[in-house]
Image (cartoon, rainbow, N blue to C red; front, side):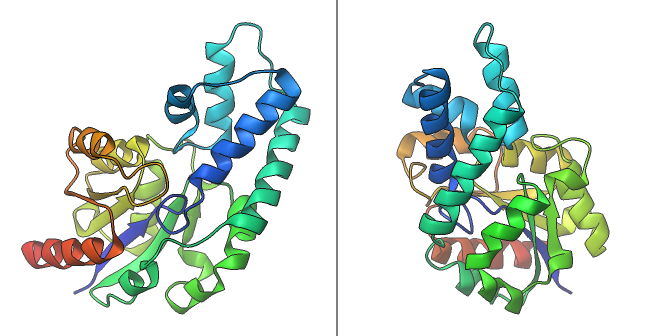
Length: 228
């Protein structure tokens, strides 16, 4: 019997998280004359939806208002960077070939964002259809709440215990734990592949920490055998 593999998209299938951070960094600088430290970029901008980024910044910086005009500029910059510079993580397709699992995507982006991101990833259609894409606008609460992962599991007809998440952010790990799912921390994307981040991931009770998709596939096979 197959299990369900729930993929995050940014930083797991696509090495794209760096592009979204770059977009926010550039627009904050040009429109608001705000420069974030590298630590603030990681803590405020990585692994969450744009709405959460906006809320975090407005809560942190006094009198900062990020209105619709600002958010439109963010969307325009993300679109430009994503359609010109987004690349796939090496070895992703080999994992999607693993026939012990059914595959779906649960991303913190909106459906509109995910649709244009997928223009460069048409090969994924060999492994899943548009009905296998779950986006943040389908649920009331995004990550780190478990809504998105639970919606994916329920829609696909799987119990949480028969699901495993591949995510790259702390919010993925927290959401998976709240959903009662196992989670693989993937740290192979740009900026994440450090001993410090690997140790931080372990603090959230992930099943394994992997920096290559070859390692991910080995871990998935082990997890599947243990759960048979």
